[in-house]
Amino acid sequence: MRQRAGHIKGGTFAAVIRAYLSSPKYEALAQSTRKSYGYLLGLAEQPETLGAYSVEVIRPALVQAFLDGLADRPAQQKNAQTALKAVERWAIVRDLLPYPITTGTEAPGGTGGYEPWTDEQVELAERCCRPHLARVITLGSNTGQRGSDLVKMAWSDIEEYDGRPGINVTQKKTGLKIWIPFTQELIRAIATWERRPTPILLKEDGQPFTRSSCPTNGSVNAIRGPLSRR
Image 1: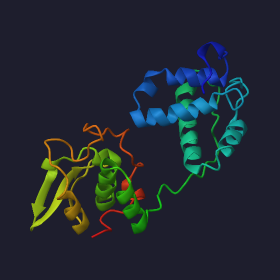
Image 2: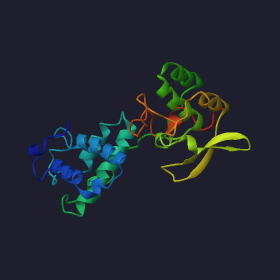
Image 3: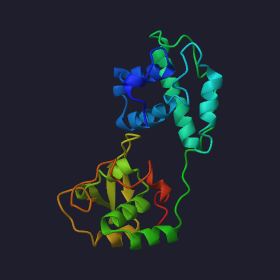
Image 4: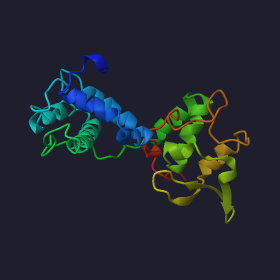
């Protein structure tokens, strides 16, 4: 829970964080980045972590202590360091910080990868989830695409090459335009799904998924590596 603005004292690191979160620089970030930074900087601005320190006192040793407190969550630890570096860069050139505060700090973070689900886990989820969620798992596990790409897949994107159906995808993260051949399992499954002039994946109320409402991680490779189920 963030401090209320009236409880933040000027000259503290919390005031610097709050100024950054109100800046055009922060507002120009991608929505997902704003969400991540906002949560982690909300932790950092608390008085019991870094927020109560004066800008004349805060230093790399204190920042490292904060990062060490996230060591059991390596991905968040790395993201927190990145967010604090962004605050530092923005604040120093505006004379809101007198010197760098992240120099030498360490946040090993995770590998960035996900351990794929086993075939048994995928099959259990497909069998036990509600139909609209099972379709997300089936499409994701058989194409290996990110949630941001899954939610954009439309029936009109399906195209056959050499007699094999597949789907054309312009990946949001990479910008690559690729054609992904359907696995035999996906061919069988998708033949039973109702086709409408809408995206392939729909929520239970019949409305399209948004990226934030799609029940996947950053990459559906967390469910199954691309094209591993043929």
